[in-house]
Image (tube, rainbow, N blue to C red; front, side):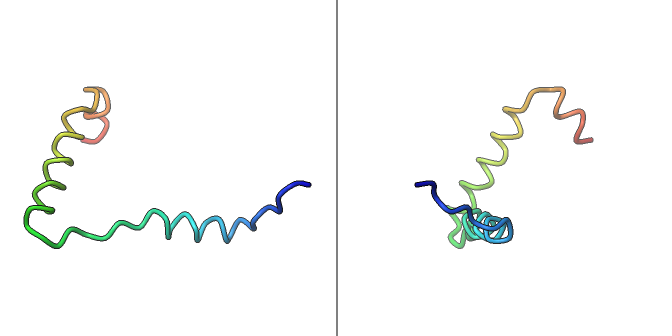
Length: 53
């Protein structure tokens, strides 16, 4: 027997709920997030960095 397929609206709601990540509250958590963002920017290929500007 095949599994029932969920409606597209329900899938969209589930995607939003599962993608939620609360903002960091503590100072060390904010520092980690800032560092991760900086490292992600440095890891991008040069061609992608030109597109952002």
